[in-house]
Length: 152
Image (cartoon, rainbow, N blue to C red; front, side, top):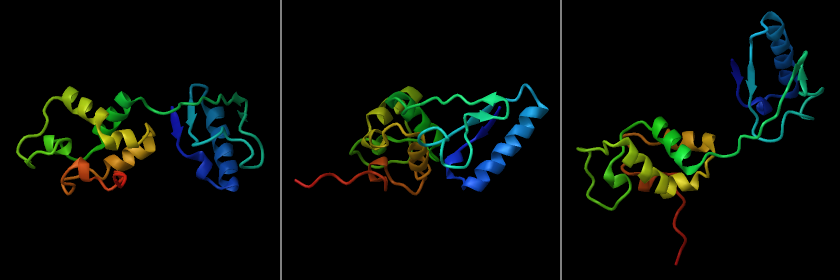
């Protein structure tokens, strides 16, 4: 399996070169499988030629949609850079002594958290937000991507 992420970000000439390389790889192995990702409509019109086929191989477009809150929470938890603590979710005294030990409890709290809800199940946004959860972030409630509350 060869995964090529963000193909739409390539300029037209690069897309054509990528396509030529993929055709060569497919000709070398009949067991090779490709996964090309794009953020919008399937690759059509953004470059000369069509992405309906790569050589003799048919391209099948599949809309993956967004992640459920449960899966978004799991992706977020898998990508943060420190343990989760009660003060990440509740207005309690900050303590770095004891993190939430139960994965199930941590995921349930993340699923209900304003931050994860705000990320709308979009994997790229979830991972970018998770990368900011380091020891330097005092609490998820102070996360820089968290929308400010609406004024009264």
